Image 1 (cartoon, rainbow, N blue to C red):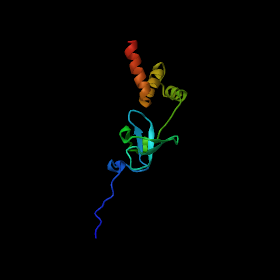
Image 2 (tube, rainbow, N blue to C red):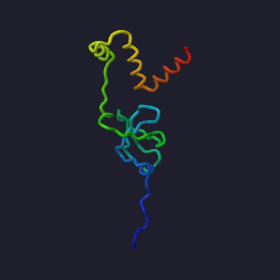
Image 3 (spheres, helix red, strand yellow):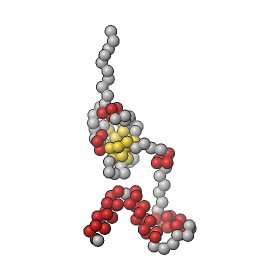
Image 4 (cartoon, rainbow, N blue to C red):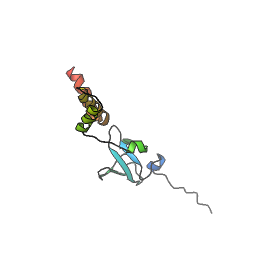
Length: 121
């Protein structure tokens, strides 16, 4: 006799997610790793600092990491300024570049600048 019962897929499996996959919270830069597909729509994740949290699947999006994406470089403002001076870039443009870099890596800072410009202007 053949068993016609098939395993029910979990919400994660239906979306193609598996434990170990990387995600980010929508509208943030917060990165999470799926660590326990418990079959619910709110499985267990861990962030980069090791903090566990149950997150709804509709709150996250999968990150397709490549070598280029996982290689993050961080520099202090002083290191950036010195590099720019070494390359022959002088003047007040340094401060403008720092602001632009901050808006690229921090969506909340970008939103702050947008609102500041709206209400100041």
